[in-house]
Image (tube, rainbow, N blue to C red; front, top):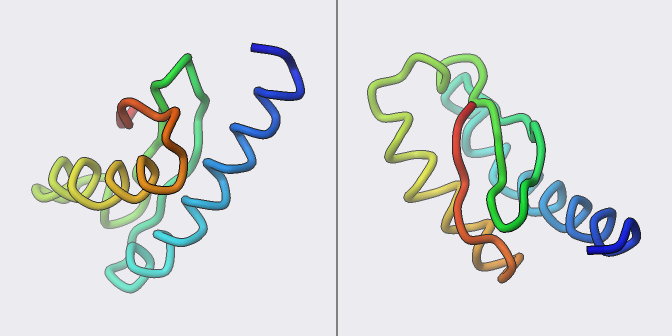
Length: 80
């Protein structure tokens, strides 16, 4: 992947995260992009989302699903 492709991918992921942030922030949480490794997006759940027992469901069922819809290259989203 070229630098330009990586930059475009990162921007697409950031844009998709901007769409999910309001829902997370409503419950006192947030999400931060840590990095992208191939088709794996590494994020950090913040605030209330960081220690919530439902964090895995939120990550996979909401954040990952939205990112995959917006950015087909994404295969998985993991919390680091």
